[in-house]
Image 1: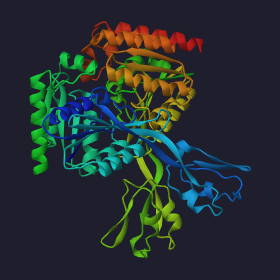
Image 2: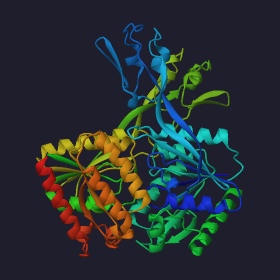
Image 3: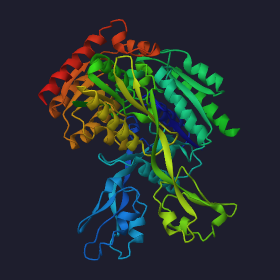
Image 4: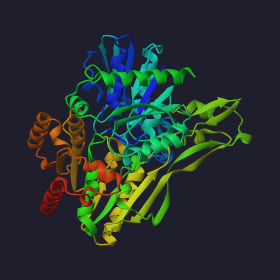
Length: 285
Length: 293
């Protein structure tokens, strides 16, 4: 059972819901939590497990071999990303623009562009009782988070039993990283807040999920601030509101210190379990 | 002409609300650009008229002409993105997985694959309520290439600022440290970092500042919701000192942020709760710094 926690707008509470849900469930069953917000991974600030392993992650880029190159210009011609350019007697590769499609390397008639690894980040695995936590982190200066997210998804698929609940903490937004983080899951929880920004970005996220044909529901966080627009929108669009978490100074303070909420505020835990039961029911249908 | 980019690393720190308030203060002296194209919200506070609207094409997507396909399978063999699959004995491209590298079209022996230009969104030039222009955009659903759209918005804003002889370009950046952020930072004169005193806020501030440092851009920082955790606020101040980042102000938690937002107003147009003075101070400090650059 694979669930992604996503949102259009950043800072609505994705990580809070992900870490609390995963921790709470792990008290009674084995759970996997995967932080796919690789640009700014925060789940690890709340889950302090024992570090098990680290796996460096690479992307493949072409490396110019001057000796064998005939300067035919084919590589520059085939690259759709302007990541490889011929300047006089030199071939220059721009790794940050390269999408690792291998076209230049495999179509080079002189085999002068072998593909080599370039480190872009790492995956770390942690254990805390029944909670398996996987953190994926992009190196600063690297731009292609989507690729690292895809690699992390494969890593989870290849190394873990998928029968237990797998919770993915997705990146914010609606573009390629979010698609990559949500396209393999069974259900998406969209976390929003009842403000104009929250609703505006929720609509974009809903459009994205519909485009992907993903079942989804909405969690309204910081309920009590802003206005009613989010509820009207969800009603008109027949979108299920899975849970409402009230705006609370206490929650914000616990969060600011890197603490979990569910074990300190019973109402929060109740709502979290309601949310989980509704998600399970949705999946059952 | 000076280019100011507001970023935060972490989402939800108040970046857009603060940028909108700064835009109100800058008034006619600035062209405003919303480079958070992935979840663009700033227009909700600026009353744009969407006077000019253009489609944005970037990148390509492969398409197979079924009638002429001989089903040799070469395309599927070379695709590194698992974008080609066989459905009902025919080869199909999944447009969401396709990265538009064009490799398949190049190796297709019967030339039955062609690349279509990809419409990834729209960009707009609007007149806004502060008596100036704003460049903004809407990224298409699930679109790739948000970095390129960010670059487009920035370039249009730059050109406008030149034509209109404006003093500043004020840019709302996107969260994270990836391609859209890199795109919004390139060529900037000053960065305003908006953070909050939480473990996540600090963690993300440090990561995004490491990125800013690679561009050698001077930076200032606003600590929003500073009273949420005074100990963490103190650690942020120490970090700013250590890294030579100018402290542009600390704002206590203020409901006016959401209240003004629900009315489509910037904080500067809302009843005075103390935050507006703080923001004015931050803007004055920023202008002073820009004068010395």
